[in-house]
Image (cartoon, rainbow, N blue to C red; front, side):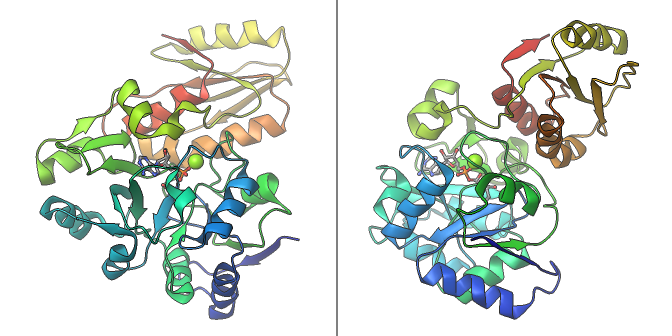
Length: 335
Ligand code: TXA
Ligand code: MG
């Protein structure tokens, strides 16, 4: 059975936090909100709990997890050899949506790192998440709380849809504020390398520590084995369209309508007078897209769309992270 408890994100009820913490300490699974997406948490130091977590998500064993901590001291229990550069990043961006790949401590559950000598760590900027880690008194491993391959959850109902019956407790703190997963930065190479773009952009990192590389897809595969798996995908076929006029998008949608219901997610207004045309309007900024995209993909799936046409945005700033997720979700791109 999965229990769901609604919490006040500004002032989380201590009884709910304590219940979550005791489940984590007993080797169970607790889903909780972070500022990016909901995470599926388990005790990072408990090998059996971590194996249970991989199973609940249906996650391939070669895709390592991110460990969540509540303060700088806790970092030393999971990682070693933090460079002065690393300390500066921590000082500036934690708590926040930046995950650092560091050398791992041997006490961390073995399967968590999928055989890598490194461990990914972050300190989430969310009160419920931080209080849960503090009360559990242990680092909490948490991948996004979706079934493997599905879009990440941004509300508790998404978690329940994917993992109901397979997670002991869901702490419902309302919608997450950012909406896409954290930036993953590998600090075990020189210069550091971005393995997954996120809300902390390459420009922000370069401004603080100088040179930072963006992984090519080959590098990404080698260093972050999980990225080879299909990601962020709804059941419908996703088609990404870039730099198109309203008329051109309309034409693309009309063609798809011959095969069944068509969803559209975008900032350009497209009106088609057909019950099987399901449009979700999103603001044109990267922040708007990040907050809305996963939820919109799930909603259109639920409404039975056979194809989903998504309008791309500029790659500037956080747009790069949004476009990264859209490209991974898409089975086709029309430029
Ligand atoms: O925002 C987030 O990061 C969310 C919330 C819940 O914190 N978590 C999340 O976890 O997105 P997950 O498991 O869905 O993504 C983890 C990413 C994967 O791309 C994985 O390959 C990479 O982090 N990763 C984990 N450990 C790594 C390591 N030791 N070396 C390289 N990449 C690693
Ligand atoms: Mg994920």
